[in-house]
Length: 325
Image (cartoon, rainbow, N blue to C red; front, top):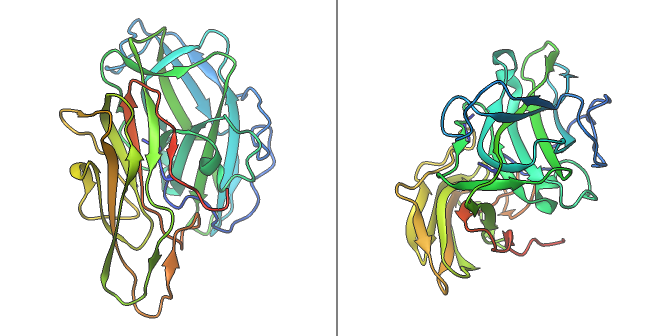
């Protein structure tokens, strides 16, 4: 499974944004489902490299944080959330973000979402991305997200990040895993980047086996913003998704695959200006007899979101009206 951010992402990311049933997260020192901020025992500061550009294989400072070792039984799935405080000496700006998944753990990764811990009182782990701003999202095969030169995502010392894991074990044997994200940190950048989430949250897809498309153009752009990466997101009924500015498409997944959700990098990046709108178009097919499907956070529901990386920061992080929240 490939999310080449997250985002973040998405997702909400990212693939289902929450609600799948499964056992409670395992009890260990790194599990923190009530999101009380802690300093993760597996957080490591790596200063072996002398490069701080973030664009190569080396990096002067790498913030490595991990889920902490846990075991998932054969045939099970689970959501697991851990909080991670930015350690002393690690503040600055993230210019590269990459999945850290050992080869032996690849088979159990469904998705990983990294969020700022802005709302530690979220109601449970499965819907954490609804309450906390997404920074990065990934899965099996995700390429590192490298930000443009001179652009970084702020990482303030002492603040908290929240990592949500959705792991599945299709085998009959228990699997022990320890996965996470690596952030390449530099002291500062000329521009601060951020992620904006946009899309419709009120639609119904009838079970007639026909294509149904939802288009949303309600997310206004304030000022001049450069969009350099996007994570389009739907669930299992999706067929295609397009993100645009005033309808002009700049990021698309023309053949949607729920198990292979890429981040799209426009080349060159696109600029949106004051008065324009971010747009998203989603097309689904709901097979006969499946029942009507509506927007929702569970995998069997549907979504139509764009998670877009841009600079300079300053837009509302959620340009969507989440029902019930």
